[in-house]
Image 1 (spheres, rainbow, N blue to C red):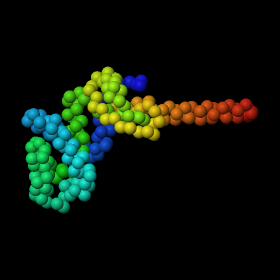
Image 2: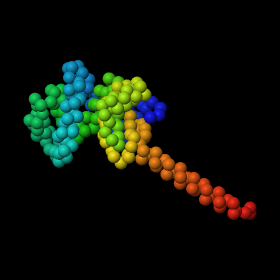
Image 3: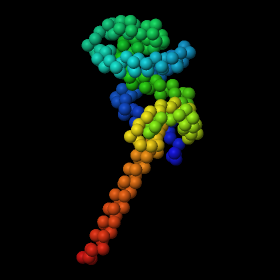
Image 4: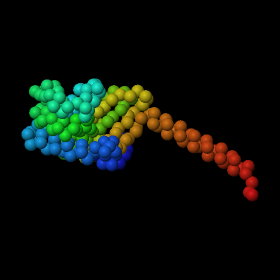
Length: 215
């Protein structure tokens, strides 16, 4: 795998575009949660709790997510739901944070906040998410070797997320931040196909030139 060292996170402009008009609001709320949880010594747990709420409650239940984000449901009712559902199940700072979001009509931002809180927390600890797709499963030794190589390239601690994608045929694709290194057999075959097409086009053009006459 040969490439320049990737950046440690997606470009700010790309991240802001993905979050839309709420990007700055999400960033401010996320910073506030991380700071508050850090002061209480529960930041790691708070990050995991917010991700779990998004992954295990909101994502599988889009209608429930719509209720929390709806301006038609009274804030007092949503506050009751939050307390009944989450109190004693997640860290206190996360429950309080969600109730603050509710008072400001921002519960619809929870999914974006979960991702931004994770990004901020990992950045502060020089950790970087790494997405890896492989044609066949990696054994522990191979994954560790890949992790060491990414760490050497980035100067950060990789958080590896490895999945299997048989369509790659062989090899792997590694994404670090907004940089992708495609070392798959499928990619090499596609590059070969393009070179063959370009070569054939050049050959055809050369033959045409042989039979062309000056004006």
